[in-house]
Image (cartoon, rainbow, N blue to C red):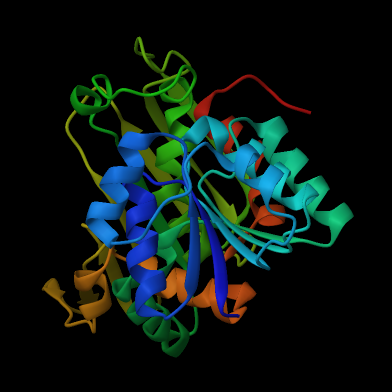
Length: 317
């Protein structure tokens, strides 16, 4: 493909534009406000069509076959539904794919009805550290167990300026980055037991999380997070020969069986240093049609019941 519609002109859209320029993809950018449009042009040199995607669609009957949606969290799902209805067949949308579980399911249903492919942008799947680990996991015969932590820094999050409802569902809008990575490496939950406690002003559902289960690849897993205590994101994947440690996620540490030594592995990560980590390979997979590597909207919708159970959000049908 040679052309792309990029919806959004904020900081994340700028990161996408840098990758698309490097891939020589002709890109039309549609934003809403004059301020973000000016910042986008200064950062990328690319003009932005202002006024929002609805206004742009009213003036343009012919659309590119591919689109990337990098707007605010509350507008991701509605923008995806709008573009699918207008005939765009390939979409990459920022996580989590919609403002609510119902909207994510609507995107899934609309995509199925219209024959569109929709993917959710979990760029951590494409870190160089993760790509390296996949080779080791394959050579070792697969994952036998894994554990992960998704502690958020409450002292930072509480002051972020977000639309109403976003921080209240921060587990879905942010923590699923690390959770998706863990389950992508070790397998989706087949059985899971979840426990929650606490609750804070901006995320009343819970602030302390723990649980365990078994994945569909027969790997045992456990997790924990405490948003009222120090911590950080991390994933550990165990095989019969190695413990692979992602802490931070961009780096890969390894411990070999029979040794207590833990060392950093060298990884081929120039793309993660030159662009937002993981983003180049993610966009490249989308552009080239490498669907199996991306998180589909179907996969995301299927995970919603698990995410809501883990987060203590109200039960869903």
